[in-house]
Length: 74
Image 1 (cartoon, helix red, strand yellow):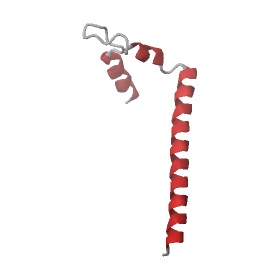
Image 2 (image 1 turned 180 degrees about the vertical axis):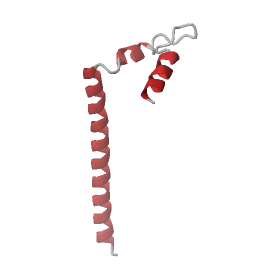
Image 3 (image 1 turned 90 degrees about the vertical axis):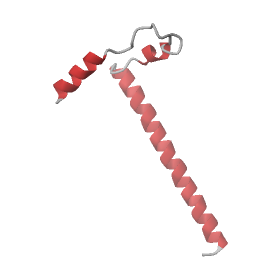
Image 4 (image 1 turned 60 degrees about the vertical axis):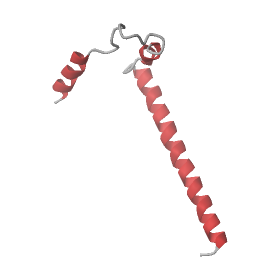
């Protein structure tokens, strides 16, 4: 291969890589938006964690509820 072909190939590879990252990022952002609209997750609780991160603060989610959900699904 000559130099010009390699440069063109590199350009196409870079374009498709950026396109793939763009699609993955926006699909993830859309899924977060959709879950927030449905009310599946409350991300405001997690944003408060930044301000209240002491060792004596209460946990955000109880582990027993999560374990019960997993048992019911199986």
